[in-house]
Image (cartoon, rainbow, N blue to C red):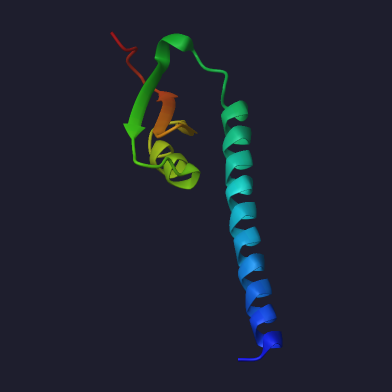
Length: 91
């Protein structure tokens, strides 16, 4: 294998890693923006749900929490923490 080919492979791998890191940053920023946009709720009708995973992935957390009405999720360590609207206030 030529040195030039190895350099191109290294550069392509580095570019792929940068794109993956950028997509995680974008997903994180979108989660924060959604959370800020829906932060005003009636406190009595806000429910919370926690899901523990080995590694909390922002995109999966957002997807899981969005299944609830007005659900918003965020990662905190290994926990995915969801807040969502519930018709009946928690007891």
